[in-house]
Length: 503
Image (cartoon, rainbow, N blue to C red; front, side, top):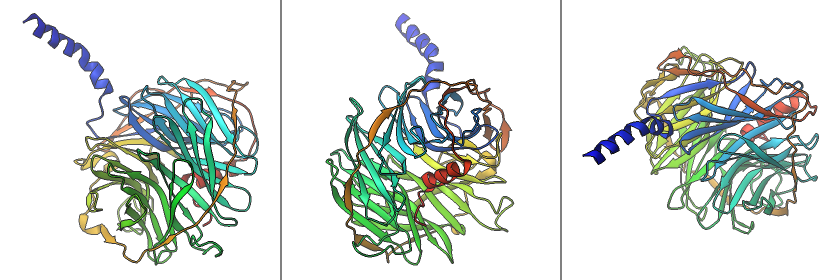
């Protein structure tokens, strides 16, 4: 009897702790940021919390155009800590990964080594202490921007784009986790053409799959087509190219691929958009076999402009987020972009489709699904918050019908999902160019600027009734002084965010 009582008492004592590390049961949207601009570009749930990364220019550092940030949230969305990555006047955090100990690895772009832009990887401990930052610089390129990161037991993989003043190419790097030296790094592309790398995933054998887009047909010797086509790579563990595909989806002139994921069978799911100047944009969802053969491609049409930005496969389902726009008289919140969140079965059939809507602009840029079916989505909003644009983190489930910003399920009859059967798939050939970055650690020494907490007051929205939750968030700053222009920051953010160089 005493043992039963002891077990019950221990359970009661542990219940608050278990609630802290569990995941949210009720839908919410958290809006957070300063007086200017914030956007969350990545989200990952793990170790009992949720992590977001992104960019902000609401800092107190004079002359800065953009800084990266990393935030840890409780499962309920409440912010536990935020760290500001202020290494130069232009720093953007675009992706993150967690290790088994809860340490955070962040990738992005920085001008810490000078006027050019370089890749960086930053390490933060599980409690948000910034440990080190490595910058990867190759003097052959003026701009090197990292988009995504993937981590397995032994390696970290980065994908992004380089620009040498004439054209852009895809960068893929494989880095040892043991000592953070580069195992190999290559640039994939052709002279005087534009290739952009957007997403990366690695299978259990170490094969690497990369998504992106290009303005070529993939056939050597032919000039750029003037259109944008989807681009997919399979790269062997040693960095050599196994296969590459260029996919054209007529009648659209511009076909973008923004991210990809993989199921337990090795099938690859790709999300992007098909843009046609007459009929507008549609979300594109494709499924490929591991050998690059396309199993199916779906076009998801809801409004005049539909864009799919991120994808996650979890527990037999596919989850997407993006944004859509429709001129009046669609609804009272028309003429602005709204967030899409949707789920499909592995055959591409829609399971559910939801919209987060507000009176201004909202974009969903990152998604991470839980085995339970709950979904975390992050991005930015101009409808609510303290600044011109603010970051948001939302949690919703399949059964969510009415939630933040008066949004919910949309009429099924108005969502048109069609199979694309006229896609042109070209087995492309690309040149493999060694990318020889110099790894330079940055000394993160605060300078003479104010290095205190920033006024980031999070606001929680539940079922259209705004309720302020929590207090001010403390941003730890690590700073060095440099000078650049606001225009350069905005242009780089657009290039990193959408990868649309060449359009």
